[in-house]
Image (tube, rainbow, N blue to C red; front, side, top):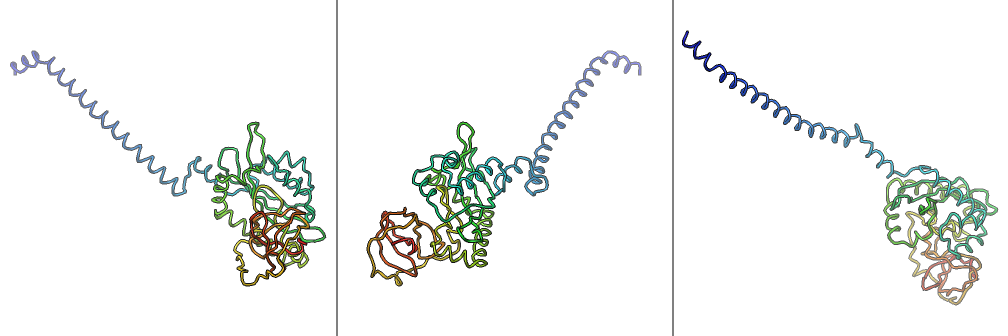
Length: 319
């Protein structure tokens, strides 16, 4: 025992140094394990959060904003809604000066067409729906409204597609050039095919059909014009009711009478349609006083050639 005590006394400092080193090693091991375990737990937690967001339980605020921006929204941008409301008020009043402050680069031919529109008294119940445009500060706009025809009690529902831009001074404009920009039109086409837009278009089309069914005077008036004013005179986009969604293009090759071919004159600005049927696609406009080449007749419609395009105009608009 005395020998062990003597040995312990002689080697105590080495024993203490060894014990200290062992403790340091243990501390390092636990520290490394703790750090490694913490690092592994983060991805698991993050993965659970992503899964929760994807499942719809806890959507991240960024995803929520993106989804909201993609949806068709009514009056989502008050400034755009006011611009479109002002546009239809000026259009109904045929106020060209106001229109020039709303429509960027309004074409003189369009000015003349608006000023000479005779059959629309006013635009009512304008509702504005928007989606994001191609660039920041631009919007694809759908304006639902009803237009009041002269001496007809019931207003006709319609839907117009517009493209709104923001200039360098942060002023909003309805773009007249968008309709001739292939890139913008391709983008708008994708918007037009989205379910919420189709739902809106179908709803307006149903209202348009119902208005005519309930008011024979409205139906007769529109048919007498060849659907002339079913399309609002705008430089921006198509009117949904004028496109007869779901309608069929009539093949009239075996019904056309060509016995009265010759030159005719437009009595008023008139739409040239793809088929001899009110509501089919408008493929051109013949200004009042212009001469057209008559190719034949069908069911109250005249097949014409104008500007290298063949189409149909309601017979009462030509002489």
